[in-house]
Length: 486
Ligand code: AMP
Ligand code: ZN
Image (tube, rainbow, N blue to C red; front, side, top):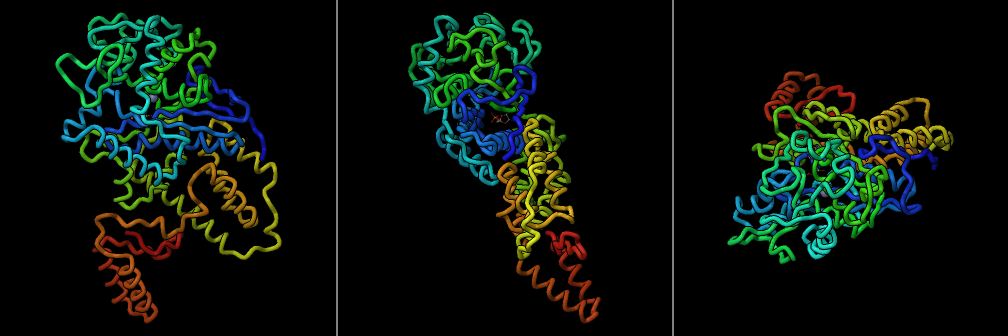
């Protein structure tokens, strides 16, 4: 393996930094996980494809990876600040189910998407409600110096730590104007940006999820959980903390403030005072008509893509084709193009593997070629460049099949596209509303082939038209040799 230094963009310092682990040979990564009150949309899943590529890169470069992804089953309000209702409570009330059942159902749905996208399992899925005692201990340890109590809960005073909001590049006083959703709706807060670390259950009410604490019955604030699980499972400072760019505004600045308070650290010129050395954020997947919003009826879930006949790895390919720090616009055409690219790669690999090994196939990748691949991924995870380098190598006539297969074996652990496992026919998924079966299509196509051999073009055309009526497009001369498409 070559050893190009891994450079990553740190949102806290706004610089590309060389990755140097806190613990030699190790990489400890924490990823903010989903709030399991609803199905994840494909934008959410972009955040986990990105974190997966980061984890794969660290493993590929030989670090012993400990990756934690949490499951938020308590505390996340409909507004990222302190306004609104608890997302979990709200969904449970709407569905007349227990929060625990809601959490279980949507956690399992999330895991199904994780699997379908070939996102590797983290070392641990840490579930927020498993850490309530630890959260209370954490809050107790910072309460005297950094918090104050109001009727509604225990609040963190952001003026008690240095450089609050540096990640958001927002000055505390300007926070209310600068940050979307940061609305000072709680009477008595000392600073607009102060936030609840413990939310008391209002007098006379009971909540489905509430625990006793020194500040009364209640539930933890959302930011507290990630501070606590990060500290407990990885230790401060750990190497890398990830999330989507929306978290740069409220969630991560608040996590950082708590971490500074907990470790008694000073300002953020020393990045490790934030609890992690590097903070990384993926940009958003956007969709013009608003189908990314979970409040719209038919929002973009991975299952919807599958129902329409797109293999989930086509969506993974779509993510990898863009740099994680660029906005990515979703379109069905774009997804179709990503599927075609994946098919081409899978078919190229199938062909290579079907060929008997020849003596010239013993020619292997040169060190320079390996270095080029390494340089691409080491440049802040440049997966678009890596993909085009792989495409170039697979398409070049003058390279041996041994060399091409070696490149696929080397790079697929980074890309996670299952290029050596998946078969071309598995990429063809039946749209949910299709009535005709694959066997029926194949039988009709065989009949059509026979008619054409017999020069009976009337029958051949009739079969083609009848298939078209059932949603099957016959693709004569398709460069991919695909023959038909539903
Ligand atoms: P949530 O379940 O709302 O906490 O979000 C889970 C993850 O998805 C977080 O890291 C968010 O920052 C991220 N996220 C939310 N919307 C998008 C989007 N449209 N594109 C990419 N990431 C997103
Ligand atoms: Zn978090």
